[in-house]
Length: 198
Image (cartoon, rainbow, N blue to C red; front, side, top):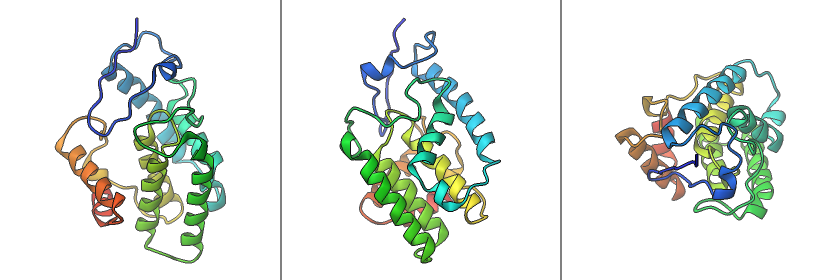
């Protein structure tokens, strides 16, 4: 049984060689895949509530990879591994590590020098990590969870509401507002994305 996926606006298709990494061979539709991934993500969210790490460990390639692995390892063999194919979004696959290091360094500078509000720091990090597109799948969900971890663990603030929806993966008006806010952030205007997140 093959994996037959259909995508909505803003979702990155999974390459055929990446589909081979699916651990649960009975999954055949996008809805089934989403359900299994969500169960795995919920476990990662529970784990994230117990995290006690200094900022230097949270803002690192190791943590970025570990979080993705915890979110998707029960579904995908390549969970937590940087993608080795180019996509319709993101930097060239060979630049992932370099661009992620630059993002982490930027965040540490913002954090240590009190540049931007805590919300804007975290949302800028979230936006740029999606733009890098480290992984074959799950980058948006990963970026939102890492943003929630950073805002709560580093700054003691409530996690973001993300437009009041826990499911931004389905085609909806809330998702359209989210994509529009992302497009504004692409142009350097982070206000709509911060407002959407809060």
